Image 1: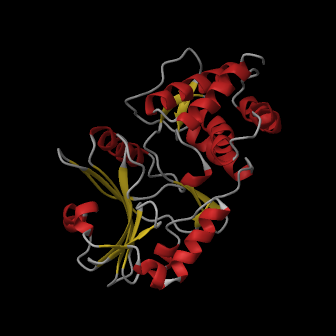
Image 2: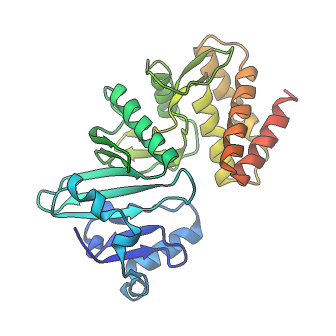
Length: 306
């Protein structure tokens, strides 16, 4: 494995790229910013070797799990790392390529207790939905006292950026909802439930040719019907358009929501939206995620008026 690494961005050391990474599109597509500022900084960093020369990590083995990964990747591998967001759920994601045969792989690596639990659960869920044509294939699942590692195939294509709930998204939602998956943390409710991804947002999807692939299944469980649809609608807007009025978001998507619930033969979706809002608010409060706490407090208050 390469011993020299550059970090991006210059102000927050989160992404790490090996020397020679620019030759591989796999790595140059690893970071895909949603904001104009982020895209400009990323392009400048990619194109300027001078800028990168100020972002050399002098001791990569101290900040990256290179030693623990050695036995799980080919000897002549190049690896790029995303260290994730600091906190109890922090995990490292890795894109890798075997430079001898060109084979690509993706790794989730966790060391904290909660992050290990999440990654291990994702492995168990993926094992049960491998028949779906829009999920990654499991290559390796390791869970021990020190760390948890999940290695899968790489989803090809570009990050999904379309916020509209189109026919492809609806088809995936319907398929996910009919899966029979054994999970350990199902939500208890008097409402009808189904299996759900749990974090069904554009940034957890890839576009490849005419298909959409879905990854990051660690929050998958049984939730009240519509949970994934509501996540796609409200969480996406809350994070990408935080100033957008909640009522406007609902009204713009109401027809789609009604159509999907009609498919499930449910005439009143409001109790399901109420359940979703309260579940999300509780989850974000536990994570102390102030931005989403505020958004879901607004949603909780709004659904009381419906």
